[in-house]
Image (cartoon, rainbow, N blue to C red; front, side, top):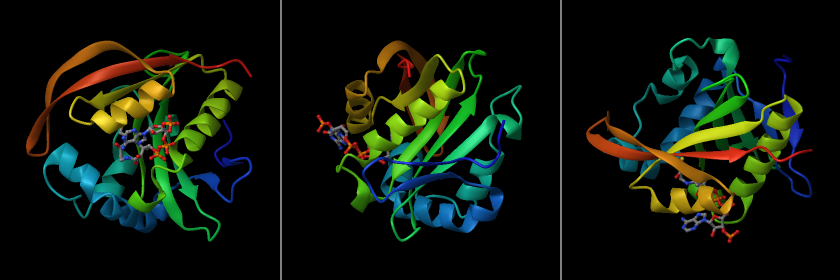
Amino acid sequence: MNLFVEFVIQNTEYTVKKLNPSDERILQHLYEQCSDYAILTDGHPPLSSAAADEFLALPEGKTAADKFIFGLFDGHDTLVGMLETIRHYPDDKSWWIGLMMLAPEHRGKGNGSQLYQAYETWVAQHQGQSIFLAVLEENQPGFTFWQKLGFEVIRIAPPQQFGNKVHQRYVMQRQVADI
Ligand SMILES: CC(C)(COP(=O)(O)OP(=O)(O)OC[C@H]1O[C@@H](n2cnc3c(N)ncnc32)[C@H](O)[C@@H]1OP(=O)(O)O)[C@@H](O)C(=O)NCCC(=O)NCCS
């Protein structure tokens, strides 16, 4: 698979580029802008190693080659959002979204939906048939966002510790649209 990945979001100034470990500093800055989400998830602001940890975190059996962190860049080439995904997980025909977040001032304007749609098109181009994710039960706005994109709950994951908190999560799935 081509390691250099870039796509545009049609009719906007935004572009999407695959991030590499050399982008750690800008990704860390985004994590800090999104501390509301870290507090919701972990009960504390992001660790100073949040971005570095993100590049290393992998589900069992997967390697760094299976992991893609896409960055959403505005017209000034500033990182304003991210979508982290694992290919061929939980099965060979599927992709898993581990995290998607936008800087607060870029939310609620359709950017998240457009980033997702561009990502799904890219997954379809790579023969992905299904997309999975898990959303915290406590993250009602996040749940609504995914539902509006056509994701459906397929199961509830047992409570799990995240930082200082314990969360139950909805595992959701969507069939990739034909291109
Ligand atoms: C979730 C997130 C990625 C969505 O991106 P976004 O750009 O804000 O969402 P959009 O503007 O594209 O909204 C798409 C739809 O979802 C709905 N939605 C988005 N955020 C919402 C919120 N906070 N409350 C209720 N609905 C919301 C919108 O109303 C919109 O519906 P519409 O098309 O009928 O108007 C973004 O808000 C974010 O980064 N949130 C914090 C991190 C997070 O929760 N990530 C998800 C973890 S799995």
